[in-house]
Each structure stands twice: as C-alpha cells, then as structure tokens.
Length: 232
Image (cartoon, rainbow, N blue to C red; front, side, top):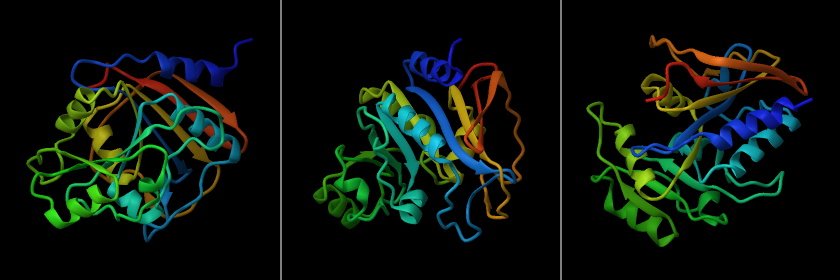
C-alpha cells in the first residue's frame, strides 16, 4: 500500500515551473478556529512533531522558501532543514522597505537570504543588509503600495528558482490565495482553539482544491491538494 505522505511529497516534487514563475506550494499551520499566531501576532506553536518533520521534508524539496518580513520580525526563523537530511532552501523575504534586521538568524544560515524590496527602500537599511550578507532584489510596487507579487515571482524564476515553498505569515498567505499564485496547498490543522490571529480576514474569495487528500498526522489533520482550475 502506498504511503499517503509519500504520495504527497512525490506530487509536490513533480509540480512544473512555468516561464513566468516557479512551481509554488503554499503551506501553513492553523488551529481549528483558523488562527496562525497569538492575538498580538506573537509566535504560536501549532504543529505536532510529526507535522514539523513533514514541513522540513517539504522544505528540502524546494529551491527557495518565502515568508513576509512580519514573520521575520515576529519569529526570527531559521528556515532550514534540521529535522531531516536534505538541502536547505534559499530564504526569500517579501520586505517592501527592507525592515529585515541585519542580526536575523536568516543571515547566519547556510544559504544567504534574498530580500525582495521596493526600489525606494531606505538606502541605509539596504546597505546594512547587504553588508550582513543578504542579496537585495528590487521589485516594483503594486497599486496598493505593496510589492507586486507577479513581478516578485517572475524575478525569482529569472534567478533560477524552479520550486518555491511559501510559509506565511497572514498577509503573505492572503496575497497568494487571493491572486491564486500557487499550484498546491498543504494545510496543517491542530485540534484546538486559540482565539488568536486568523490566517485569513473577511475579504471575499473562492478557491477549491482538486481531489484533496485528508489524513491524520499525530494529533493534527493534514489537507493537501492542487488548486482547482489551475494556478495563476
């Protein structure tokens, strides 16, 4: 009998990149009431040990791992593959005004991070990040003032990224879901309520997964599927 987790990993590994963007897997963990952080945006430990191992196995299958600067400031993550054997992905941060602290753990990891920032990001911040080992990739702003997501993904593709894993936080998750800019989604659901920060706000959108897979993993539930109707 085929292990369903191995089937998920094999399907993720087979996702094809396009000419305009990498193959993208959106993955995050939430509670039963949809929370991904504490009410004050602090770190909330959600995933079970087995779910964390799955996350690290997924990381090892991707060239790069993208988060928003809010996650850097709140969690100071490493974004490495520590729980399994495998290559570490390139950390990528959506950071419009280059707020990533030069002392972040990302800048001490095995892969130097790429910071996607606006052309008008403060020069002093940019210089400090570059001096700390980060590579800054200028990305145009969209009409709402944030980075243009399509342009950011196209830049990553032009830099050779074929597979991109997106981990959050809330604003990044919402941006990818609203723009349909992903090929597959893996959602971990912890069997508890927290009344914290929801992954999604009230903005209306509709998405559907094709042939979703539902399975238990430790105390968590895993939902995986490709985006119905194709990605962006």
